[in-house]
Amino acid sequence: MRIYLLRHGATEWNAQHRYQGRQTDAPLSPEGLASLRPAGFSVDAVYVSPMRRARQTAERLFPGAVPVAVPGLEEMDFGAFEGRTAAEMENDAAYRAWVDGWCLGSTPGGEDRAAFSRRVCGAFAALVDEALDAGRETLAIVAHGGVQMVVMERYALPQRDYWQWQTPLAGGWVLETDRESWLAGQVRLAGSVTCAVDAGNCGHPFS
Image (cartoon, rainbow, N blue to C red; front, side, top):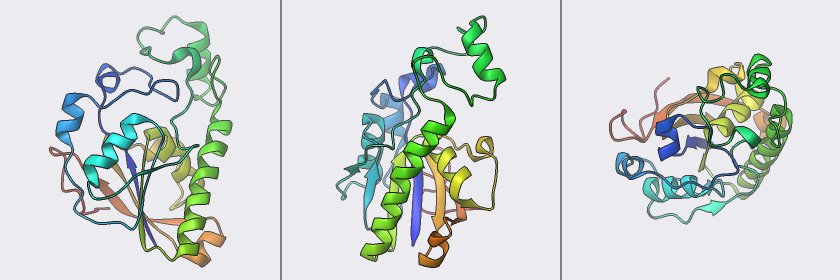
């Protein structure tokens, strides 16, 4: 089975480098919408984060599909850091402590990395289980950068650190798995893909 794990397109806050997590249901910006084009591949099912930016991206990439929202695939809850930039918080003691701890701890009023990973990976695993049981050959999951990073850190081969799984907006990973591999909790990296007009050819993965 092939899985396209994709990040949403650009929002105003992305352009402003603001923390944008589970609390803010921001739409794509006009530029973000204009940068997307239909994917050059078809899938058996399209799943999305419940956040509007993910659904709008899926609708542009897969115009003939009906995206299914999956609770649990939302971006990390950044708590008190939501909507702020790193520059705005450079003298914030709580923010400095979080960054100095490799962003593993809890954000004030938000999530820590471990809780975020459990939430996302639980939702992802349920989708893979369901798809394998149904005999699906391809599916797309359109969500967020942090979602991609915790999924890839937990399941992907070859193994890489969380921070090494970053992708550009509207970019993502192409994964493959089968029943035997998934019983071991593994997906294989088959390539990467981008669906932005100015950033390569959507539907033609490359390593």
